[in-house]
Image (tube, rainbow, N blue to C red; front, side):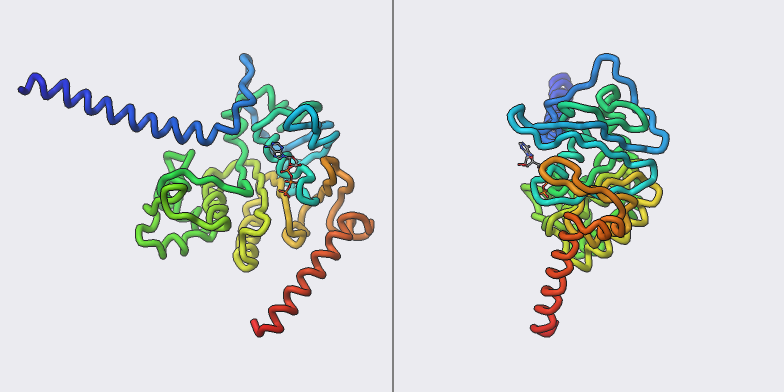
Length: 305
Ligand code: ATP
């Protein structure tokens, strides 16, 4: 019997290992599902990061050949600077972040990081250098802990909690019965858009990459949480090259440069003050948002909040 037990025990072990690997592969493919378009060149080198400068040179892009969603986009985010992109829904803002992370390749023109065309470097080294907080974060069907630690297997529990604190999600996690062991995602606790985004921010803070791309949620955060996170992001952005895709202009007034996009093109660029003085599209958007904010405040006052 003993002779039978050992091989069976071994087979059981192999079976569990395979199941585990399959679960990991499922996760991996889930993550890479949107990423079948690009592959490393045979001679791809690792990205060599110096300051993390991002440069778009005459970039054109279409998800399909019949419709270009970006046209002749050129801009520069010098190392350590913060550039914000604003514009109407569908103008092409999030597409910029997808191209930087190389979910797709530019149709025309090129994107450089520290002078290196991102098509010439390994995707692994590129993605290591960039922390992206997307508008819609998809969480893994796993614990909150796993979701924050993802990609940083060596992180300690203290580091994970510290990142969660900075992303203003720790207090919320502490209120859950299983705390950091709470299962989230499709098969677990459903988090709100804002909570998911904060988990993504914590993951990015833990990774601490030289380049940050923050795709602001349209309406996922309440204004108090948003202010707190903005303050935090402002602090971490200090030593990083940061590209912020913004919906609320109040969050990017301090940017070194603001790009205004319309129909896939940059139509204005400058600081908040310069753009207001120009009296163009940005000034118009600003006036509208100020008016909306005022109306909102008056409504709240009327109901005694
Ligand atoms: P929003 O402010 O609403 O997030 P945006 O400026 O970020 O908008 P993008 O998401 O970059 O806009 O989209 C630009 C254009 O590309 C839109 O017309 C959109 O319909 C189209 N688009 C976006 N994603 C895809 C996709 N995966 N496949 C095909 N078309 C897409």
